[in-house]
Length: 291
Ligand code: FE
Ligand code: FE
Ligand code: ZN
Image (tube, rainbow, N blue to C red):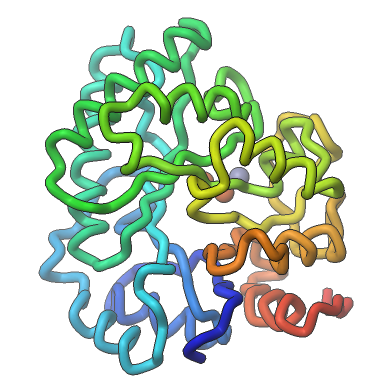
């Protein structure tokens, strides 16, 4: 699997008894050559000590399978919200957990941590931006790692931040260490937020102009259950949503995105993971009606 230009995988679980070793095995079972995982449950910040997570065995399997560890991605827990510092408890907790996730990511070996920029919860966009910048500056001056944070483009539910390239560019350009922060584009989220993924060339042009293409660290490849601009954020299996296979296939194989990890976060179908099939379809560049 070495020397491939397409790095494609999906989110995998990291649960016991095999923990990280199980994550790598799961990814390999889908014939993925990268993957994304949470270092604990996505929705909370309860985290097992690193010694119990079979990290060395997982890394050994990564190596012996020829996977490139630098393409593997960690996702920070959803409940971190660093976009509202008026809620002091949530804000302090968010910074603490973000710091801890950076250190944990480093201990596992990957170099990219995806983070939702957070919600301003009624304090306004300007406040949201300043809160995020302040928190990132504080955390990145303390963590002692070289892990990069990839701020995810969000669907625009409620008061979510990260809903425009301009916002993300503003955040990054006001950081003390801008080199430590990039972006994760989620195709479902940008569609739901009103961008036309069918005209992906224009999206990339805008991205390059406002943020810089070198800042694109990860792509989340998802179809969507909702039309453009719905502000919903409900993922759909590849080819079964409003985007469809051809549009997403163009994203996955876009010549400007060579080497960028492509991560599926599509839903299980009738209790089964769709990833082996979806990865195969993108490798073959042809859709197959499997549902
Ligand atoms: Fe996410
Ligand atoms: Fe995502
Ligand atoms: Zn989503």
